[in-house]
Amino acid sequence: MLGAPCQQARPAGTGGRLFVIERSLNANAVAYDVVTTGTGRLDPGSPLRVYWMMRAERGQVRELSVLERSLAYGYDVRACGARACTIALRALRDRPIVVEAEGDPPRAVMSIGGTRAVLRRVFVTVGRNGPFSGVESIDLFGERCTDATPVNEQIGRR
Image (cartoon, rainbow, N blue to C red; front, side):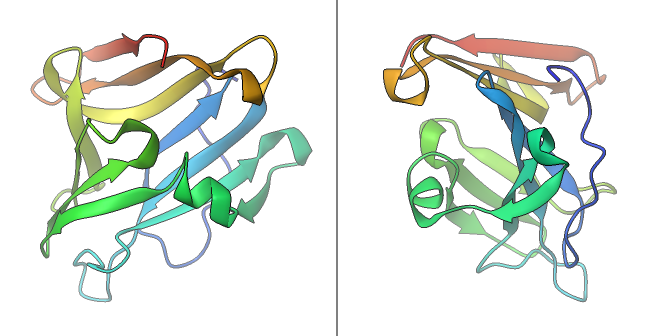
């Protein structure tokens, strides 16, 4: 499922899919959806809804565990306004992402390959010995903000 777009339905109360994290272990993915208030503003307390799409298990949706949320797949809000929030994924703390709710659809913008881009997908390659052997690489995939040209960047062994 490396390049396949997510086709599963989103849980109610979300304003649109921003990006997903996929892993080399199986087809399951973590989805990041924007959360807005009734007036279309970002929810400053919790601007993202993050959950598992269990593609390998008939596509059910499952909440993240406390451990998953606090270590690998959670995020921290660094600054938040009505139309944009700056967040950092727990696994990529040094790579800020700006969640912009201005446009339709909302988007997650970050530096990918040295250019300002809309993040679409993160792919994590896990060591041959499974999840406890560590991350070999993280690949970021997106589209350049200026012309929607595909961009990608590989972040080496962590």
